[in-house]
Structures are given as C-alpha cells and as structure tokens.
Image (tube, rainbow, N blue to C red):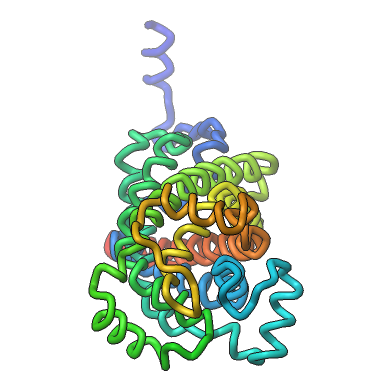
Length: 331
C-alpha cells in the first residue's frame, strides 16, 4: 500500500499509462467483420448477390433442367457434353437463356429475403457465439423456407420456358396460361418438395460455408483481410458443391413437378414426393434420380462462390458507409 501511495505522490502530471495490447483472438476477428448492418442493407446485399449468381450461371441451369426433364423432352441424352452440343445444333446459343427474365424477376426479391432472414436468425440463435454451426444450419433452414415462398412461382415459369418447345411465348404468356389452364396451385406444386430439398441443402451449405471460411481464415489470420474475397469464393464453392450432390434426387422431383405436362413430360396424380420418386424409378431406374447431378454441381459450386463473394463485398461496402456516417455523427 505504501509503495502505491509513494508512486502516486511522485507521478508526473503528464504521465499517461501505456495501453496494453489486447489478446489476439483470430476466431473473433475473422468471423464477425460485418455485424451491425441494417436490415435493409442485408436485403440489398442479398438481392445483388442472388441476381449476379443466377444470371451468370443460367446456361448451366438450363442444361440441368433439360436433363432432369427425362426422356420425353427433345434432349434425351444424360451426357453434359452431348446435351450442350444438341442444344447448340438444334436451337442455337439463345436456347441457354430461355426463361432468364423469369429468374431475373424472382432471384432478387427471393435472395433479399434469404440473406436478411439468415442474418437475423443467425444473430438470434448464435447467442453471442459466432462459431456455432448449429445456429448457422438452423438459420439457413429458416432463410430457405422464407425465400422459396417468393421464388417458387417464378422458378416454375423459368423451368417451363427452359424446355424450349415453343409452348409459351414468354414469361407473362406462361403466367397467364398456367393460371387459366391449371390454376394458382400449379405455381406452388413443387413448393413442398423444394422446401424438403432446400432445408437440408441450406443446412449443409451454410454450415459448410461458415466452417470452411473459418478454417481458411485461421490458416493465415494475418492476411485474412487481404485474401477475404478468395476465402469467401473458395468456401462458397465447397459448400455449394457438397450441398448440390446430396440433394440431387429431390431436385429431379422438383423439376418433374414444375415441368409436368410440358414438352411431353409426365403429369402426376399426386405431388407427393414418395409418389413421384416411385414413378421416376419405375420409368428410368434409380439412375433417373441422379439425372443432371454433374451440371447441378457445376452450377452450384461457382454460383455459390459468386454469390457469397458478391454478398460479402456488398456487406463490406455498406459497413464502410456506416462507419463513415457514424464517424461524421460523432465528430
């Protein structure tokens, strides 16, 4: 006590204690760089990311859709190379972009919902732990159930146009004819299957993405900020490829339900997943459930890389704006 009193007595009035460096925690600095954005900023960032992703990868998605429509449609081969060659020879390059307007109308709003719900749910379920894989998976499921409700109608229109048999003149012609001939329920015929597919897809996707991103950034935390774009792209590609491979059979069921009655494709008496699977297996064997798995992985790996890197870049942009606004307010 005497020593402390003596030290205080003879301390110079200009003395300032030297601040101690905080302990370095890479698991904190690399996993929560963009917390604190406004809800509308998450929505805009997600909308931009989803639109860029789907527009860039649309030709691959068209090939996948045609391959999954089974043997009644014009393209009967399940080989990716043969499928591409067949489409180019018979219809030309524009065939790969049929239905892109429908996706343009649906992708932005759906991904705005997707990422804003994900970020909100992640904050709620993580309970202050940014490295909680269960919270990431649950948040992903909440996000996909919400976004699928927005995207499914336009996805159905998009897939029917992708078949390219001339049944519909365009997006609005397809919407009007489906409403008149099949009713509003036709737009959501595949919603249950889509949710059942996308729930595990998104759980695997988000958990894999967050874990891969964290692992990559912890390998070299001192350069994490400089290499952030590469990290997000790599983690997104890994997550997209794995999730796509796991859920291909359900994606085939979804495509069958959305394209039924078009281009000679079967109509189903029931939208039950089990019923459609039995019909596919009876007609094409178990290999029919894996139709389009290669283009599906070729789509989702780069698509997820594009989507996540665009999303994180957009978040970073908004974070800088928020920092500047906050700084000007303080001064």
